[in-house]
Length: 156
Image (tube, rainbow, N blue to C red; front, side, top):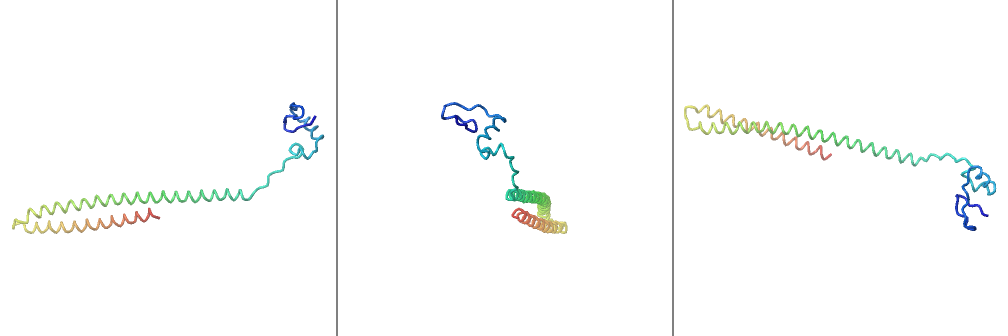
């Protein structure tokens, strides 16, 4: 009767070999060449460290580090953009205030221009219209500058 390893069927007799326990396995190893049963006789050697796998891990860690820096930079850019948006919103409210003053003083100047007795007051309202227009234009230039700065930050 032939002996088959790994409990395979004995094809000659159509029977299965019984389970090989440790004591039987040693006997079988003696019958067969000891080199066939290396897993039983010889202690397995420790795997050698492969520097390529270490390099792969380091590469992965490097990629993760760069990604985290990019995400941190992205978060910083978003916070700067939000800060600029808040500044723009404040400036737009300020600009609306100046424009409202322009409209109010224009209306007063239009009503008072036909009364000769209050000529100086009419001129004062016209002067305030000009001053508030200049202030509104300066605020608009600051808004434009901040919007350009925001676009530049988001493009980087």
